[in-house]
Length: 225
Image (cartoon, rainbow, N blue to C red; front, top):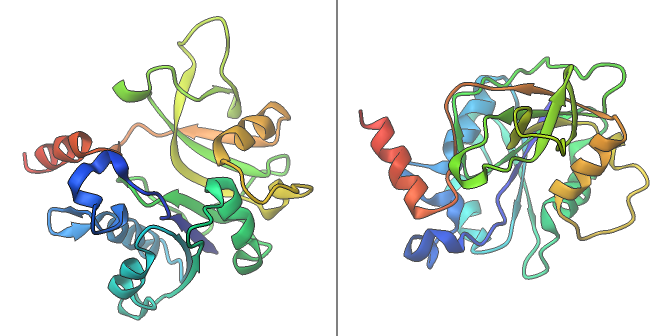
């Protein structure tokens, strides 16, 4: 099984921390955000990781290298100044990721979610999303979960609405017929969920979207207790 880490974001909400370094290399207790996620994947037995790059991407490549230090292989896909969007980045990586389902995660999340090397999609699913209770910065949530099936948000309440954690297991077949080269993953997943192709689970463990300096500070304080 392979995995892909989305690491091309500009990270403007990090302020001065990302003026001269990409957000995935922001430090948390002496280790970069992306390293925490690489280690989680390595612990699951994953040996092949694809990372997309853009803003200061060479610094990520120079810092992580080819993956030898973790006994894995890292393939970099540098988008340069032509950003493909999160969905376009995955579509661009499919020739490297292959035909088997792959883990996909954002470089700027911190979690104790346990990835599984042998996780299988059920027969009727082309994707599986890990959902979390909606945090303060996304109280309106992203998806509903009904009998382990992900669906667009219900319109009649918020009791069954969750936030997409940025962690998913996807089949390349989920992207069959996609012609756009530049698109965002969120709207695409909502469309495929409305068609009944995506399963899901609720994760109640530690999860942080480290998307701003304030959230980084909050996480740092939490881990120091």
